Image 1: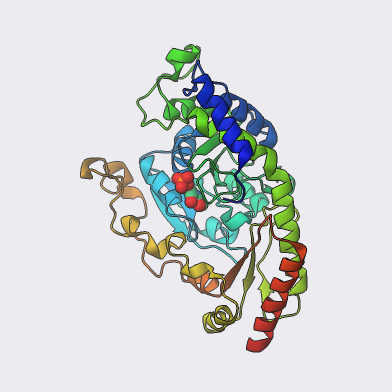
Image 2 (image 1 turned 45 degrees about the vertical axis):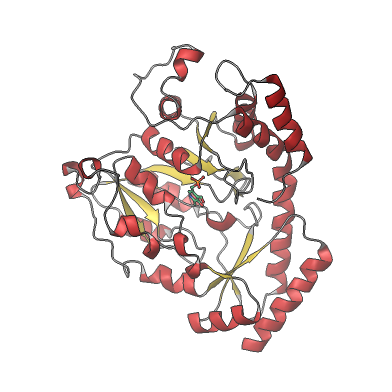
Length: 386
Ligand SMILES: Cc1ncc(COP(=O)(O)O)c(C=O)c1O
């Protein structure tokens, strides 16, 4: 969460005063946001959900992913990426990242097996994946691409908005994201059939309010409807996102330029001029030096972020993929052909990178002299450990 204030209060008040709290057939805030956000991203459909996890689940289902399918996910992402795969009935296969802290295209290509059906590139900490390489691999192997852009709201890859490049994309609007409604999410696609399926995942009864002219047969789905309050807040947040991301990116580039030639090596950037800029990532020579650096300049070590590292995904290691054993994807007969042999050291290369990667946060409200002072402190810490 970066900014929230009077405009959000006014937008919520408006919804409350009209009493139009339900989106279908009554309110307009969600529909307005969806139309604006689709345009912002350059996609045909943007559909609000209750969270990033439900958006990912819906996006996977929209691509026909289900039992018998393996989906490649990075070793560094929030556990929800892997959980969404299980929610669709499929099996997540964890793949190495590279120095960009995002999916390694080389590791992806090496990991493709006979049952692999999809890849989830995750744009972590505002940094975008190598989408050209990943899309080329997906095309070659006939795989679906579902972008997890939950941590990259407002960011882009070579001019194309994150989340708009694959077959479908998912965003989170939880408290910690670039745009927030406290909680919330959005699934996006430009494919008509996929959009119908996402709509059904979000509310399989919406057609009763909106008219049932859709082509796909309805199926029972858990539901993830957004409220008009979510829509109202997000309309305000969308007005702010572009200058906010530009400011963070500017700070990030200043930090990167200032640290050139020091012991901190800039993490590989796949599209520095377009990504979010929420974090500047740097690699140190080894884990021990990294610990020394953060003692002198307190900041986050990517490998110590717990839930963002695959080794911390207990339900995945315990093969508890659902609340009931009979619907647990790990038990389903269709999935017995899938690879389920994840070990704590399966992605050792990722662990090595993550344990020597530091994340330095930017902030849209940070003043120039504050950034300058911050850089001085980082430079002093870098010099002290060199
Ligand atoms: C990379 C990533 N994917 C998915 C999610 C899930 O989003 P939510 O918390 O809105 O369900 C998050 C949220 O933190 C995330 O960071």
